[in-house]
Image (cartoon, rainbow, N blue to C red; front, side):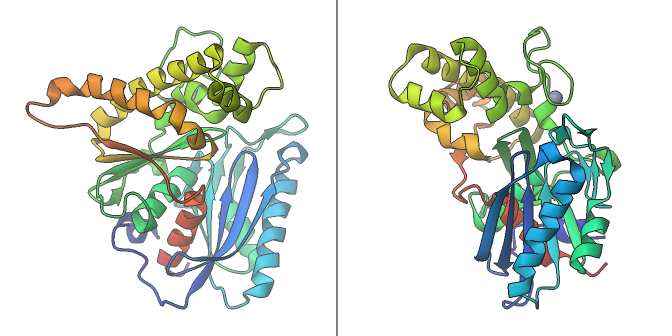
Length: 330
Ligand SMILES: [Zn+2]
């Protein structure tokens, strides 16, 4: 199994400099696929909206079509890495009914042996990892956690993914799972906020880009509003939009405080499409987090550095490449 190989991310991918792999990043709205070399350079890349509404088989077809198209130009590629929204079991490469992958026609996906399906179609071994875990491995390889053994990433998109490194090793949970810190309960008493997992009050329901946009739609009475529209309103100093971001920053600080208490990262990195709006929430969240942590300062400075990923929304794709480059034959 590959878990041991991928656990230490701080030393870079140990492989031939000429080796290239096929990498995928599957999220709730789009699929990215690319050919990546051992230095982390993306040689070719495609991005397509995923057909969730058409159901599981259509999405699996999109993945294999995108992969085969890239492989036709790089026939010597021998390995495939896949970062996917979870939950999933990385040991077997099985999706466990991913909560953000549903269609009105077919409902939820159930268990999907993604690695073995893609192995048959692409005729190469496939390694699957949770997308946030892949993202923190990419940050340790090429990004903001490169010189940091204790680091955490929050991916703010359709969901709120979390990936954690402690002493340079990926933090995993029991039963082949990983810490689902996005489903930490922030406000159990808020009946309006339903998380994709079916529970009310999860951090993800408030802090994902999707959750933020849904709250903004209700508050501003505009059902078709997009996240970018709220950013534009905030840029124009619209009071309601600014308040939405202030509320978001406050809740983010509370969630971060819990994450710091559990994992003590030196850096927390924000990635995903909603991280682009960080100018409107990160300064306030940083100040509030400091207020929550400063009472400990006499004996330990627990305040992490908070920063936005510089991997331009490619941390999942690059992390998928990293796990394939590290992978041993299966
Ligand atoms: Zn949840």
